[in-house]
Image (cartoon, rainbow, N blue to C red; front, side, top):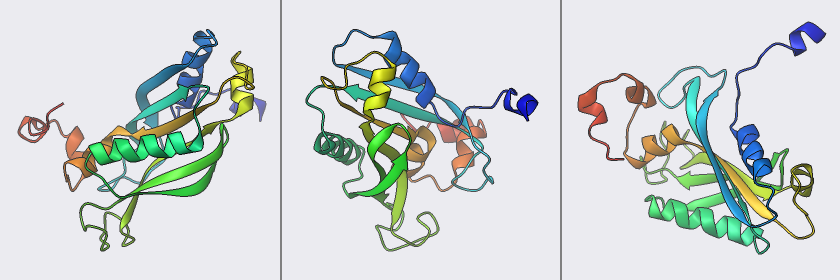
Length: 184
């Protein structure tokens, strides 16, 4: 119904804010645009899922950006975070083409399989891809001149894995004895 279609919806991704940041800087020059914010999902609460979490979205605009730049950047980022084994799986996202899901090897079981990784040895950590030319056109960038890549990841998921926390809900219980263990 038209009435239902006009009701507010809690955002499920920060991508819209990232695109607005890109549009606000129509300089036609390379740049890096990042947005961090809360997102909302209809999730069953458990040790690794929450209905509200924080997402980081990024778009890197550079005439030299390529799929190999994206893969290398994400591989290097996760290696510095302490996750040296990364894999990429083809996927679909409406604003990128090609698109990929990124998985890291499970640090809890070292890839052997556990509840954290659903017994696969891998944990999905983010979505990514090359910015679709139509996105550049929509925000005033010349897609013949510029290319770029984008990614989005949940901050709590990365923290959970980096510090070996067994239950994501602990980050929201406001126990300072727990929270003070983690440097920012």
